[in-house]
Image 1 (cartoon, one colour):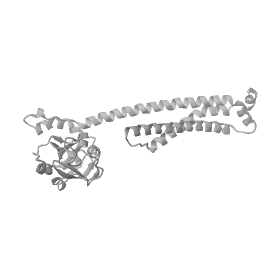
Image 2 (image 1 turned 90 degrees about the vertical axis):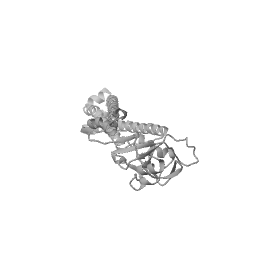
Image 3 (image 1 turned 45 degrees about the horizontal axis):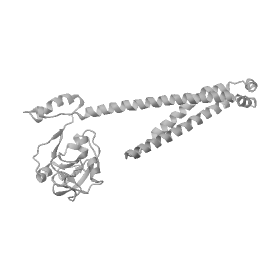
Image 4 (image 1 turned 60 degrees about the vertical axis):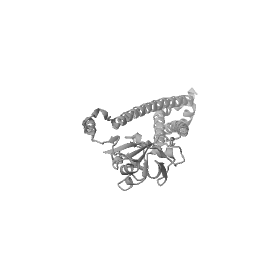
Length: 296
């Protein structure tokens, strides 16, 4: 179990910045076991412990560090007339996004230096899945036996599950659209190859008459189908990468495309091209050289 307590102070980069310019960053006291309870991790530096929690040391949430322009531990921030050394920067905390916009002090340091009375404003508790409902009902009476209605209990894991379900549905929709696009592309390649076979009967008959085998004819048209689908797949990957880059740059986020996504997409186009080219290739290989030359 971990806890935080909101403090009526602001954090600034230096004393020369107006104290009304808070940047939406809150100052909070935090217990030593808060990070473990929230299953968090440090982007850099270290978390508060029994030693650093007594001194003017502070840990910043990832958003707070960005807004303050702090990139590495060792830099200082100004809180309530005193400079505090940044000893760590947190990674994103999905279970407690409000921590991302906070500057966290040790419990003892907040009490000794900022007049903190020791009463938490938020308590974080982690339970096994089967005990969540029972703990949810017991927490208000345990925290405030006299007026349990004043205690608000939330379940961040439920929000994460809903978010995961939404993302899963969205991913399934995109996969479905991708499957439809592959099907349509495969039909287009097959139609193109069938028309190619019909228009090139003289060529097929001529090749057969001078000794080309059925296997060589099949190989020729399957290869052409692979080239056609491969060029289309490469063009699609290039356009998709360009669209991703434009969106990433406009949103100021990193541009990352997994290698397996590129390999999987290109591999799928080759598989579809092979399947789509099989029927036209078999049809071409079965043409009679005499009939093909005569029909031309």
